[in-house]
Length: 116
Image (cartoon, rainbow, N blue to C red; front, side, top):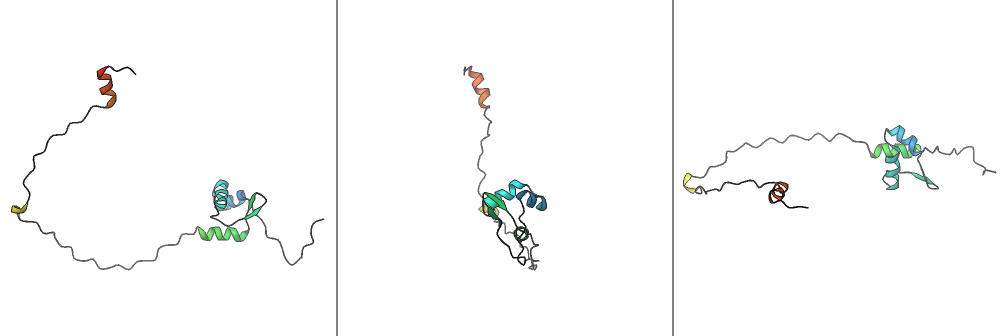
């Protein structure tokens, strides 16, 4: 025989992860994973995750994105031109050597006729 319940106190409806996922527009895996990692509120009945309407409202609040507060514009500082050093202080041109690309490894191996 089930325990007697007060008619004044109604039990909250418990939703399955699949129902919560359908309401939120995500996968049931996401809902179960977040509950398992304790990132969203839930109730555990045995080994099953269950959610009340309060849980669902809190999940929605937790993932709500609000616009950033409008930032006041700071007047820009005048742009100054960088000073160029006199030509006498510039370093002399350094001679450069020409770079050559190496052959790919497989081209080098086949060139020597190595058998693998």
